[in-house]
Length: 247
Image 1 (tube, one colour):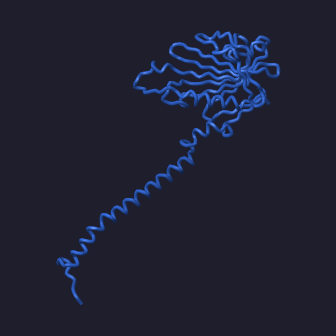
Image 2 (cartoon, helix red, strand yellow):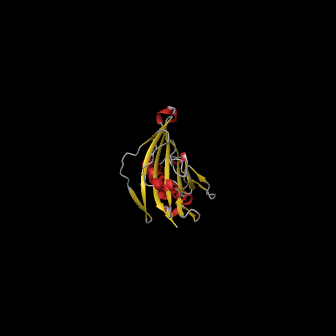
Image 3 (cartoon, helix red, strand yellow):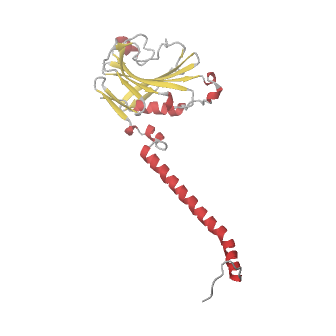
């Protein structure tokens, strides 16, 4: 039996060394490629699990557009139902105490503020959006009924008149609402109001929202704020209005 001398350089050891020298780069490339693909697959799986479990990054927009997933609120005492995203803050006023702010610019007429919904600034982070409020109110006073479907006198400080005297209408779940829109300004703040109104069951109902934003130039530059997405915000608010239904 031939004894192998490992420390002796031979022609076949040179051949093996040459083969390894040529093959090792290809072997390393193959392992590196497969390792990268494996890591990418793991990361994709983790991301998918996170989205599916927590549902939030990719499902956010679809949630706000799918009213069937929202929180319903039925108000037999107010004669209506409405739905809203779960992260918005509702306030039910079951006492039905008469108040002059049952709708904006009610000209002192008393009514009942039946429902209030607050949309926090976190809905549009890093923008000049401050907040928004949606209110459902009604009044059965003669003056409130008489003025329900006419443009307001706009006694709100800084309020600007409607852009047009033509009053558009929209049908929401079988009920025809008149639409009023006006804006207000003051101390670097903007207030944009859209009011949906209807005469129903002997009362004037108002479903309206006001968007409050700040003059972006008034914020320090280091905040790096961007203008808020008005289309996105009004789309969600109008979808909430679109869930309003008389019982």
